[in-house]
Amino acid sequence: MRFLLVQIFYYVLVTEYIQATGLKWVRVNVPQYRSPGESAQLLCDYDLGNDTLYSIKWYKDHEEFYRFVPMARPQATSYKMEGIFVDMGLSDRKKVVLRTVNLKSSGLYRCEVSAEAPSFSSAQSEARMEVVYLPKEDPVITGVELQYQIGDEINLNCTSGKSHPAPVLHWYINEQQVASPEALIYYPQVQHRHGLMSVTLGLKFSLSSRHFLGGSMRVKCVASVSPVLWKGDSESVVESLAVKDMREALLLVRSSGYKVETLPGIFLILIPALLLCARLNLN
Ligand SMILES: *[C@@H]1O[C@H](CO)[C@@H](O)[C@H](O)[C@H]1NC(C)=O
Ligand SMILES: *[C@@H]1O[C@H](CO)[C@@H](O)[C@H](O)[C@H]1NC(C)=O
Image (cartoon, rainbow, N blue to C red; front, side, top):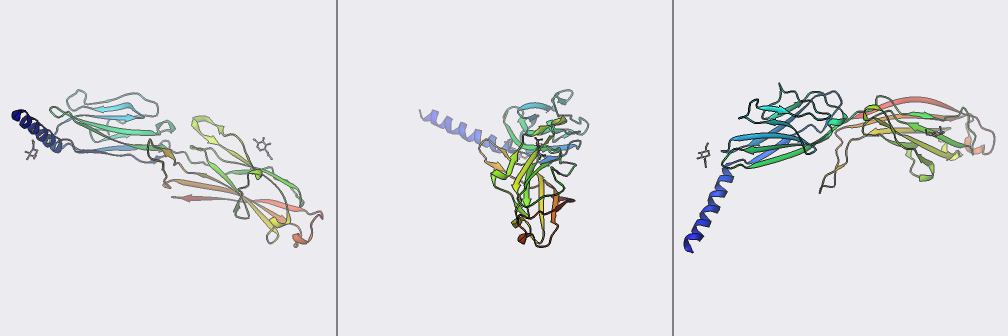
């Protein structure tokens, strides 16, 4: 009995000792965002301790696409997968280079390191990469009439450029975001080729003199793309402003008279002018 206890104790000690000197940690370094057509370098850093490397395996969304086994011939192998084009010349036991990424390359990348006998230990680390296509065009405001009278219903559409993920649109009247649900009309997203999407948001309100500040009213539509918001298993929301693209379209409606407030009900000609398209790129 005493002998058995000693044996167990010895066993536990030795196991812990081996683990402490073997594979210690694995860490991936994956770019968070990439644009279609760019290359992406995925790094897998690890400390084998006294262990010898048996294999490095890379997975995208739990499916293996690259393997490096020092004892195998050839040492490196890649497996066909949509959105994955491994540059075999630049990839090795520490990194994988994806040649030209596309929207299908977005996903969760995992590197798994395994040690040779006798420890056979393995460890892994993972990170997400999003391929983001920012819109090339400004949003467009349509439905503009040549003239409006106080009391008229204003009925506009704002349509974004194509992007991935889909842009988010907001309307502003005199720099105040329109939040009231009766004023906004949501239309379904439109799917385009290559996974790109565009959206349209309608704005409907009845024109009143209080909309005119100093004789004019500014109606603005802002489209923004912020690739964020993926929910991990346990983690809530990983938000990052590393990429945020904002584009806007502005509509300036001028009153023909100076004192709009004093002319309710009187025929009033307002001249809308599509003024400027500004681009804001926050990096
Ligand atoms: C691990 O490696 C170190 C230095 O390379 C050596 O001193 C040590 O004895 C090794 N330990 C084992 C358990 O092999
Ligand atoms: C806004 O767009 C929707 C969907 O394309 C269309 O059905 C609607 O007639 C448009 N409204 C205006 C005012 O242009």
